[in-house]
Length: 186
Picture 1 (cartoon, rainbow, N blue to C red):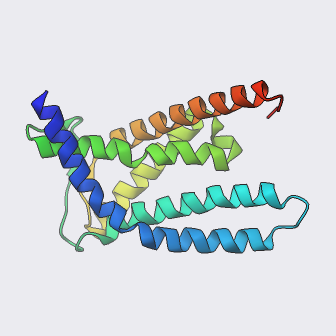
Picture 2: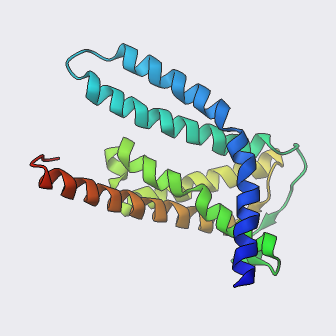
């Protein structure tokens, strides 16, 4: 039980770094939101602004993710490929935290993607998209030598996407049920 507490403390400490990139993401996402809503027509303005808000949150998330994955590291600081499954779990508390963080890193991916793109509302399509994007991220980290290319990262990111999709579906079911209770339909 103590080890779980230590892992949670490590994760909390490690999350401070990506949160420090949030202003850059918010600047880009907020600017996009303002431009998108300003360009929307009056009759459907509320619908357009909601969509632009989702896209803006998506852009904010992607900026933070890309800064964390690439620009927070020196070029050439991390090299190598590790294709051994569950190799990164390791024996240290910090290693366990890194694995959990790789899952958490892609949860927003699975939550936001199906809200923006209708084709992503299938668990298979959304999870596959998360997997492909994770593989691309790992490939570019390898090419730029800004991250280890690890099979575990792809698996954990894909798991995070699937978990995010499940959270999206739960939220959608709750909102749909609330809408029906209030006499509204989706």
